[in-house]
Length: 94
Image 1: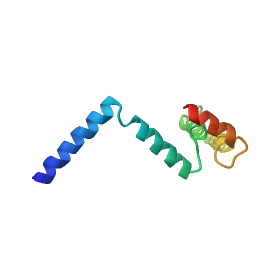
Image 2: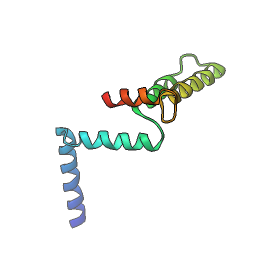
Image 3: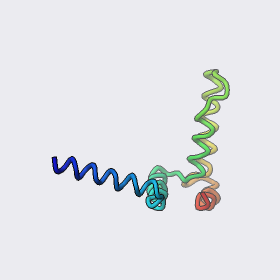
């Protein structure tokens, strides 16, 4: 019973910190670390998600082309890509 009350108390504290915005800097830093381990930055990941997320036409061939374009364009701004410096610089502002 004690552990359950302690768990509930911690959940309330974390929820309060989230609502007040106290966790925002930590959340942004954690996001940057996770993207960096995947070889991405915010720009490359955003491009990939926006271009591959919503299918414009429900045709299988067009969907494959759209996915490949999104992945390649995102890879240009990702870690090791041609636009790595530009992607990193733009990611700092996001």
